[in-house]
Length: 107
Length: 420
Image 1: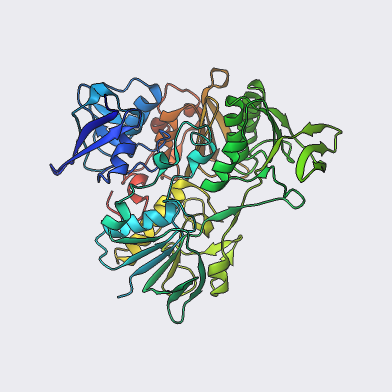
Image 2: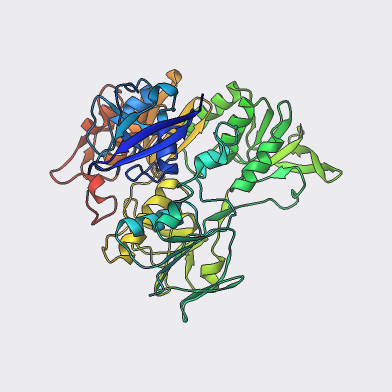
């Protein structure tokens, strides 16, 4: 079994980036490592800036952490029920093939 | 065209390069990085990375191919020795780089205390510092931290988690005197003590006892002798201004003086990040800020200036620190003569200190109160009367405490002139 998990990001303009990351890495780190545009991640994963906002597929689930939920009220683009901060999502095998939609703006 | 030479590949320098490309700049960009490793996020050095929860490559600012792919020539491990504004060149050890625009983003260096240089004495500013310190954080060891500022307290929290015995020695009669009001200092001090950190306030170091090139103990003037297997000096940073000052740039408050366009007093030479001093519109005071917010927003501002899009630097400063289970978040800058309103229950561990001057909201200091913090970033500096008594009720949203006149929200003016 491999620890590489394949995911994709779809930009607001409709461009898709297919990337892979290691199990346990965050979705934010995986996007940054692969130069996916549209993730700013100013704070580097401290859950302090709300600039790594993504719209997550059902396999990933909604935000449960209270800090993350509060931060999501302050994203630059519209908050939807499936809004997540990608620095708070760690890759796991159940996310294989997950497609994350990126908002139009992060700041 | 010679393009832009950016000296310093920390958060500010990298943001300037990224924003230049994002705003359509097509000329060469050269990024001089003083460290050997790829540019990285500095805040985790005292927290997740020091604790071993993140590896160095996980805190990289950008992916390994980013720079080449975006036409940013990175010079890792290179030092700029001189900048000549007349010939518009930056001299490196092995040659010179011509520039149309130069951006100085040299950051700051950790201060060391005289008489402390020994094998087991550390500072924490860069990746190498963090890796060296990490190796020395052995469970059960005695760590003495000199300085009760953010770096000292974050390392204290990390070291306790790793199982070290920790003493924090602070000269002042409270922690975090520069950035935090007294009431919050006291709370943070209590939390550290509850986690087993021995905090010594108003403490003078009388002498250090060294054996075989290592500090063995630190003696305080009150008679206490603190056993030390290792010592961390966390007494602040000195801006790296040598390159700019030697080229003739004006300095202020120990930093490189810049205007709202990030311009130094030298033509076509800008400066951004921890190394700068500038007039902050929202407070009307001259400041030097060491923060991610300042680095990122100044990096964006300088890119807009270089590409002719204008817009001056007019931010609401914000900052964060994670210690034990405390998520500390600050918006705005404390001023003297202000009043504080407690919002929420301090004993619950989730509250904010709302700082006002008359009917003006000047700062919000939050502990595990993320919604207050995020709201405050749109409210500090906004026009309108702030009702501090309404803010005392945590069920009233902070936003509802501001009687704002009609007009656009403050956030749109974060970089004045920028698209909201």
